[in-house]
Image (cartoon, rainbow, N blue to C red):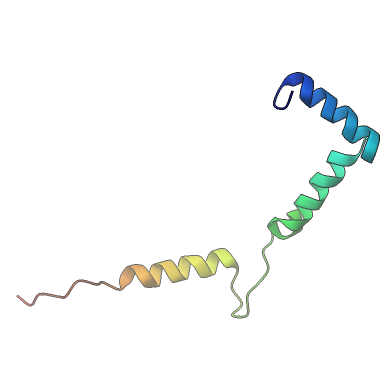
Length: 74
């Protein structure tokens, strides 16, 4: 019955009986707190004072300007 609509309904009843009606709400809250800096839009600053996205942009720009090809003199 696994993977069927009837199996899903049976599992739902089992979870509600074992863990209560707020099981999925509590699980979602735990996941939300664990990701994206607690769900807030602000990002934590690294040791250098930049956020993760700012550091990634600067690192990518630095790597993109370094050419692996040799320069040809004209």
